[in-house]
Length: 98
Image (cartoon, rainbow, N blue to C red):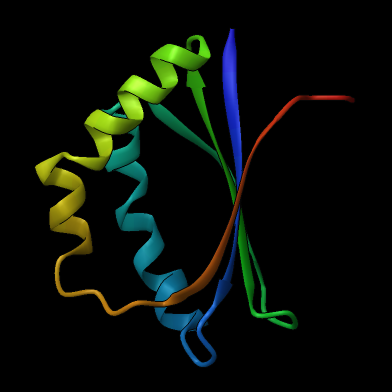
């Protein structure tokens, strides 16, 4: 079983380029903790960044590993010194339909 989370961020105006330049730094950290980034897209017209992450396991395992990842020193290091660029986050667990 796999869990897929769709993440859509409304960015702070004027921060898209910096966010897009920073984002690849988080991908290997996510991978280190078992999370695979499936895709990432920048919608510059709407100032939104949308991406999906997958975790192989059930919901309980996903939630437990997410806590470990969120508390990790590797994640903290990637975010260290970064300004707040996400104004609003829309997060949802999604199911494939096609």
